Every structure is written in C-alpha cells, then in structure tokens.
Image (tube, helix red, strand yellow):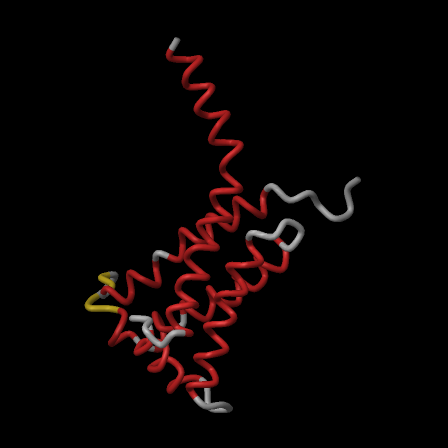
Length: 146
C-alpha cells in the first residue's frame, strides 16, 4: 500500500514540476519587479550601490525603471509556453547581474568569510531560481529533433 501511494505521489509531482517551477519564477520575478516599479523594493539601496560602482551611461531612475520592467518581463515569459529558451536566456543575464554585489559590494553582502549578510543571503538564494529554470529547460525538446 505504501509503495502504491509513493508511486502516485511521485507521478503527481512529475506532472506538477514544470508548471510549479514556471509559476514560482513568475511570482518572484513579477512581484519583485513590480515592487521596484512602485519604488517600494527593499532591494533599492543595494541596486543603487551596485549601479554607482558599475553603470555610468544612464541615470539611476532610468536604470531602475528598466530593471523593474526587465524582471517583470522575465516573470511573464516564463509562464508562456514556447518562450522558455528566451526566458532562460534573460534569466541567466539577470542572475549574473544580481550576483555582482557579492564581488563588487562585499561590505554590504558579507559579514565575514562565507558568512553572508541578509543582502548576501537574498542574492545566494537565487540558486533556487536557477534550479527551477533548469527543471523547465530540462523538459524542452531539442530544436533539431522531430
């Protein structure tokens, strides 16, 4: 009886893994982007500190607005079937950008060797987003196979 129940649970999880991963990525990206767009994101000071160290070709409000829209678009396209490759590519760019404070802003992201601050933990948790994106990508059918 336990084996049958175990098999049913695993079967259900296999059916849900991609939809749940898509929805989770959508919620995080759209919500956090919306918070930036509304000017109420707690990540604002971290983004501004990184901006001051890296970007000099535009104003911060323009950059911040673009970042907010970029995050919301990533979230939206993750739930649209057929756009997974684009979503994963954009997510990779975003994940790279969001990891930069770990290197460029160690005074904000680390309190000691391998001891992240709350901001550092916020960044490191992106490993879970990468894992969810890998689940989505792993289920894609290669373009050259029919």
